[in-house]
Amino acid sequence: MEKLISNSENETKLIGKKFAEKLKKGDVVVLTGDLGSGKTKFTEGVLQYFGLEDEISSPTFTIVNEYSSENGTIYHFDVYRLEDEDEFYAIGGEEYFQKGICLIEWGEMIEKALPDKYIHITFSRNLDEENKREILIEKIIK
Image (cartoon, rainbow, N blue to C red; front, side, top):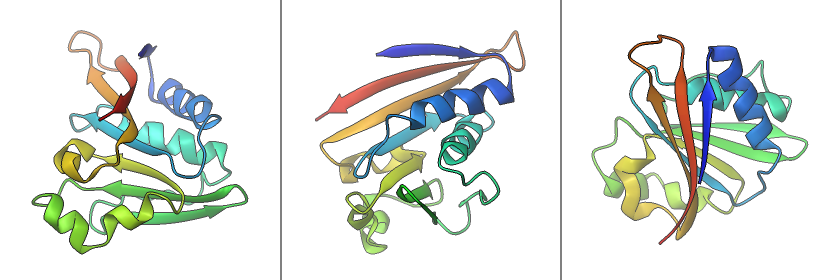
């Protein structure tokens, strides 16, 4: 388990960019936290590492965005609007897991559909310091 502190949106992006150096095809990363806690900024940093910083858009209304880079494909999910795992299965969500790197915002909502191994990142806001975030990274093995 690794605990990091970010003091700004830019630092959160830099943490995401540094984290991305270790990612490879087949990695599934679940991003958990309240609205505005840094999940999307972190994702921007990951995409920046892969040279995709100009292409990011929130998948809130499309469920998944696909980004192709020289190093492979990144799938950015936002499953907030799904009712449950069944809807995730209905869109063929689990088929993406081996195709590339999957970043799943609100992934705790589809926990049963997640693979046996994934990385879980929790983002927490600091109520006293508006821009401060705690980022907890842990590897999950079911």
